[in-house]
Image 1 (cartoon, rainbow over the protein chains, first blue to last red):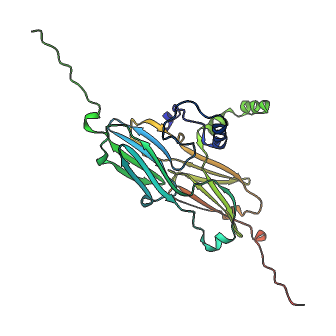
Image 2: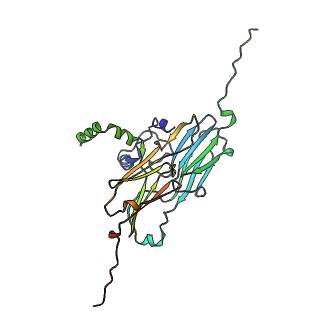
Image 3: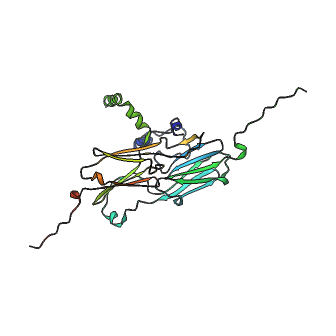
Length: 156
Length: 129
């Protein structure tokens, strides 16, 4: 799937974030963007894929546990929210600490995305592993691809 | 500047290609009196797919995103578009490279880079004359 993703030109590689954000400010994009799209590098990042029988949403939420991530669906809009705490280094550490880089997101977040129509929201499942939450939204029966028998028409 | 870039291109085309397909993990780096800490976000990387190397004072953090994806999955929307995380740092000489410790939990790597004994702060007792 990731091989495929390179076809989707949704932006520059992550390393160029600062440059892209600066460019976005100086030269605002005039092309229509998804109404819920966010600047690159937001937390958590989200991938969405589709198979014949389901839509799968991957939330790249490093550092969270299953309990800390809340996934909800309302009116076909999927919202993931939660809070990522600052890493715990102990009271002693906090006092004598010099920061050199702070790139990791901290604090509360909430991201929403519009789902395609025709999903069976009641049968949604979500699994969490190694910092990625996978949400599986099955398609409703009537939307799955179906083979149609072609019948020969009898000349009457 | 353009000329310099072009020359690099010609010399290491393979390397540049590789860089395009890797993600740069976001990191926090901070220093305490006895050690430097590096915390990196690498979602989808497990203990088995993570590799940390120190070679010639360069610390390389590399990991592969392992996702169980079903056959025939096609992308609708994608923000993460590579399968590998990689980032390099140059270590300074006061780091004890042999004593570096790492752990990974929920896709977050925490590295502790201890300083050499000689570079730790020391308290000096002032004696009464």
